[in-house]
Length: 214
Length: 214
DNA sequence: TAGATTGTTAATCGATTAACAATC
DNA sequence: TAGATTGTTAATCGATTAACAATC
Image (cartoon, rainbow over the protein chains, first blue to last red):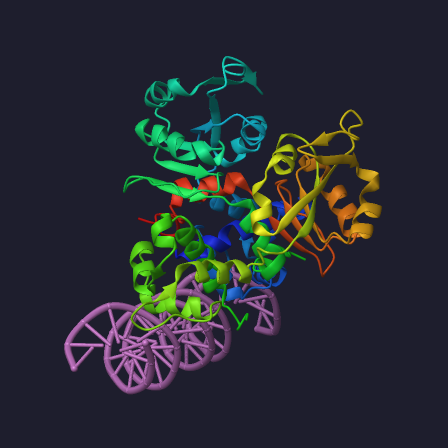
């Protein structure tokens, strides 16, 4: 597995996954050809075959791929059967949305705890997930071996919270605050900037091909 | 402007923008060379120059680019000085976070109204933004010429809400529900799947280069 | 001036696509 | 068998990078 997948392939794989999952049940239980996927997504069929080759055990001439198997293989590639603990720093509206969402589990993530400095909410539960004081983060993460954190605090506290996270052994940070974070060499940050996403969507239609499965 | 910018360039431009904006004030008021940007972001300097050429009026030999001008040019390219009205469908935690955020304005967006079907919250205000009943969406959007909508409703209502949006003249949809939406030919949807983003971040480090500005 | 930097033209590298043999 | 489809090898296309003249 993972036979040096290129960045381009990696960007297209979620596309295939979403397309396959969105198929009606009767088609999902059968086979599907790379040609059909390519047509549906407006891509080249050889490209689809090459992309799929890097994650699946392959299809069969004449019949194509077993749809359910393909969904599984892509899911496996992305680690959807994992159970990786994730913490959320900042229990405002956005943080609450993260704690309240049940869809992370399908992708192999377990949102285990929220952290905040507001003592009105520390000690409470949201969707069965505890909210603790931010000073408890380090112990919590080290004990539970948590490597992934989501930052949903206001911009002004983002860097400070980021420092606490790296100090807590967090290696991957999904940052919703629209500020640049300075992190040590080996920490990987992804800045999710919703405004920028909107700008690319509405003013340059960059996503067009990616999203219209017809 | 907009001299056929490639998808690759379009993906790198926000990087330059974030890097420039994150610069300390004293450097932001001076000049910067493409070489310096390239070094900081781990890219090739010619590539940076080519990318910048598609949005800026150009730099000067020996001194480079005027930093403030460059920030402005990229911002202009992305339409950050616009005032585009945006509506939010679904005023749960995520919707509330959208209505409550003040950072959209910096990117040329004005979140004008939230819509929900829960009559306990319709008629209220969040961060000065009214929440109306979803049945009022069509009139509202047509009157105010709104072309952009954000979907933050539960999965099961997403398609229905999507239909109402397209019927309301919405052209661009940012969808946070993790379901595939069927839309007419000319409507552009971007599916923001936070779980998938987490999966790519933690299990394939796809974003690595994109995000470590040192 | 000398040297840093820009922008462009040419070379290289890699991704996409076309052609085709193998398979069921 | 005939035909649809896979997977691979070769050709094409486009993006990146190297080389260099122009500029201040």
